[in-house]
Length: 293
Image 1 (spheres, one colour):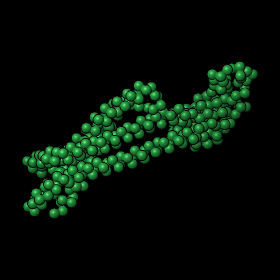
Image 2 (image 1 turned 90 degrees about the vertical axis):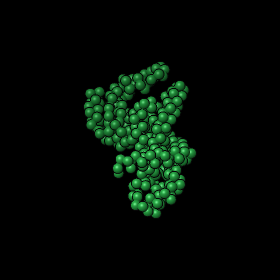
Image 3 (image 1 turned 180 degrees about the horizontal axis):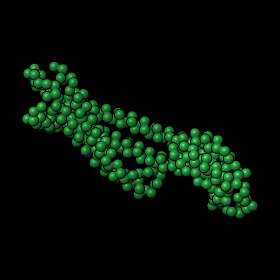
Image 4 (image 1 turned 90 degrees about the horizontal axis):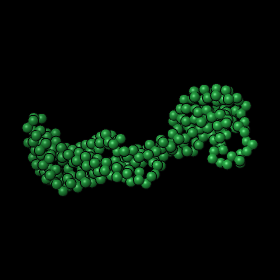
């Protein structure tokens, strides 16, 4: 394509967007709304995933060693435990410390006469992958010298289920909103093409290529998608920080909420790529019918 043709087609694409100003404005507004919702769900899912990770990291498996083992023999059991693939760390807890942990903040007089020998040496274990609690518990029970293994399998499975549900829900919502955005921009481009259908027919009859006819509409769709992406990015940034500050002021520490600046580059990339996809493919969806002249 020659340079002067390229400039002409670019200009036609920009002029078409302003010629249908109201529809272009409406398309940008609705697409921005869709992108903000998509980005909001992405950020919510990301922060909830971090929260689930934090909860899982706090999970512990308690292994009690055979009560007949001496402290030295108990420590040797730890070597076998650490060799298991999913074990991240095994902290040894001697009988004396286990007794103190058992009593905790309770009135010591209630446990008068209870000595450390009535307890067993223990290991407090953290895992590499907390979704494999059940499998790791079974492996620990097979280690020689291990008497009992205490693990909250239900919590581990619940965390894994929450993560899966969040992932599927986010994908479903994002897919629906992407389709809505595509249809909106497609209809906006279609209106522009209806206004110029006679001109397109004449251009086809005098030998204009499909690429020559298609290019201005692709430019229009691209600009609409890009504007929507940029506007949605800054709106999302502002809304996220306002909500984050409000949650922080409440003093709630249940959820992990990272600053927007920690994800600014991925979010910018998602907005631009999504805007580009919506704009270009929305245009292509509406152009095919009109090129069959």
